[in-house]
Amino acid sequence: MAANMYRVGDYVYFENSSSNPYLIRRIEELNKTATGNVEAKVVCFYRRRDISNTLIMLADKHAKEIEEESETTIEADLTDKQKHQLKHRELFLSRQYESLPATHIRGKCSVALLNETESVLSYLDKEDTFFYSLVYDPSVKTLLADKGEIRVGPRYQADIPEMLLEGESDEREQSKLEVKVWDPNSPLTDRQIDQFLVVARAVGTFARALDCSSSVRQPSLHMSAAAASRDITLFHAMDTLYRHSYDLSSAISVLVPLGGPVLCRDEMEEWSASEASLFEEALEKYGKDFNDIRQDFLPWKSLTSIIEYYYMWKTTDRYVQQKRLKAAEAESKLKQVYIPTYSKPNPNQISASNGKPGAVNGAVGTTFQPQNPLVGRACESCYATQSHQWYSWGPPNMQCRLCATCWLYWKKYGGLKMPTQSEEEKLSPSPTTEDPRVRSHMSRQAMQGMPVRNTGSPKSAVKTRQAFFLHTTYFTKFARQVCKNTLRLRQAARRPFVPINYAAIRAEYADRHAELSGSPLKSKSTRKPLACIIGYLEPEEESCFQKSFTPETCCMLYLLQITFKFRKTLS
Image (tube, rainbow, N blue to C red; front, side):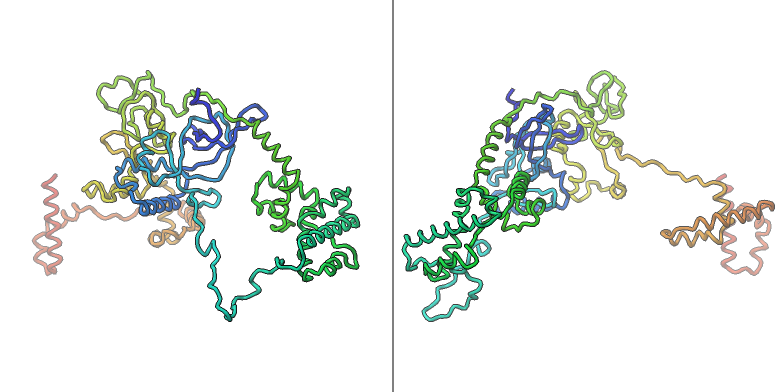
């Protein structure tokens, strides 16, 4: 019962394909749809087989750097098989979320951040255990380290300059320094400053009563007074005091100039009700990603304005109300869900005629005849010849299969138990055979992209390609003789990448065929056989050598005579 109960925060297997490995996800939310089904909002984890080779090389480089920094070696004492299986336990965290049906859950697993002080054998000794150290971004195809950073240095901290000596001039550019806006040693007392702030609030309330747009937004006196008491009014009052050297009469006269009282507004008052609704909708969708909020919802607002409005909006009753609604919604959400064990047969199962375990073709003691071409092959992973259940694996034309144990390993860890031939060549690049013919055959096979399958048979398991035979028609042969001037076979053979003008050849063939259709064709002259030549030369053998032939000609005639006699002896 507890094994089939899945809660928020669990790491689980999801099955999206009957032949592919499981997906590894972390449950973030469990939501019930309108149809009554349960969907899980999950965080995605990726395997090594899911990312590009360039990023895999980057991950291996990162692992070597960790090994060099740590005192203990990570993979020094591991065998090739353990190194191969350790790669199946490595995952890559992502910030990507997706929703999957809860009925696709196939079990629990454990995922943890790589502990540099712990032996990696601890991950191999435990079933359904994985680790990660890098974060993968599928949108931009990057890998980053998932660990904290101590922000120390000139990039994060200010450089404290040395203290100036007495009489030494300050060479810094004053325009880049801070601007003084308040003097704590002012001649005014705290009571006088508070009285001036009350006057500034009163002026702000009166200014809102005179402003038509403000009277519509704040129809009551209490709302106008509350808006006038916000920080923007206090900041303006403090700045006015400082600019007039803390002279109360001058500062008050600035608050109420000839044109009317000064009205100070912040972002909370500048935004309309429709803009506030758009902001709340964007905040619900993107969170505190203000760049996306500005780009998709409020492009006419500046980023500074959006951020300032956000922190003011958090002080309103609207934010408190939404926070309570979210808390109540989270309380009503599902905390756990029960998923029964999946018992339906996999479509990749191989069924035998009598249900007995299969064996390799030609093995002694086999009594049944397999009807499936896959039956009789050894396991592609562990090379076992017997299993209570077999599963087809890989492309259909390869006709590979896995035993029940290796199939479960493939589904959970996304690989085979034993290293493949390509991985063995990476570990030991030198050839394992001393026969040069075998090496040349393997190199040709690798160049042609033909995979090697482990079938357990002592014979070569290379899957040969389909034979190709070009049968030339009579008209094609006839066109070669008739259209020699246009075709020019020797010239075309020297330039294999230049296309042949078949239209011109076809047109010439049609004209020449019409001309030659009435007249018989001359047969091609053939060379007479060697026996006729020797028979002609034999009666005059003595006379030939008595004539004034050159030594080269005599030698050639003598060789022809010897060849003819040797053929007679063989026949």
